[in-house]
Structure formats: structure tokens, C-alpha cells
Image 1 (cartoon, rainbow, N blue to C red):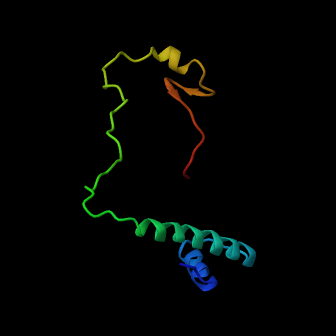
Image 2 (cartoon, rainbow, N blue to C red):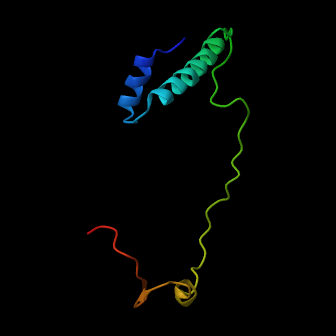
Amino acid sequence: MRLSTDEVRHIALLARVGMSDEEIEQMREEMSNILEHFDVLRQVDTEGVEPTGHSADLESVMRDDEVAASRPIEDVLANAPQLEGVFIRVRAVLE
């Protein structure tokens, strides 16, 4: 499936992305190539194939959460650039 220049301009408008004519042409080629890959996948016979979320079994590598003591407050504040009492002072983000 080949995309037209107008379709790419419309997609860029929807995504709020400003693009030059050269970038639109480059994106038209790249997106058209991606869609052609999907056309190839669409032709694969999947009759009788059980739908799966993953092609292989997954095993969690995350450790269980364990309750532990916090670091001493003096260690936590030792490298803070600015302190205000027992708090780390940061520059205001919102006014």
C-alpha cells in the first residue's frame, strides 16, 4: 500500500508535526514500506494457530518486594546541594 503525499500531510497534521516537503516525501516512502511489510504478514496462513500474547513463555525476573530499613537521614542529605531543615530544597517548578 503506497501512501500519497496528501495522506502523509494529514497524518503530520493530526500528530501536530511540522514537516518540510522533503521530509514529507521521505516519510511517505518510509511509511509506505512499513505498510508493505504488514501486507506480507497479512498473507501468512494462521488458520488453526492459537492466539498468544507472547511467542515464548515468560518468567518474571523481578524480585519480590521486601521491607527494609531506610538509610539514615544524615546519609540521604549528605550530598544535597541545598537543605532547608531536614528537607532537600529544590528550585520552584511551578509559580
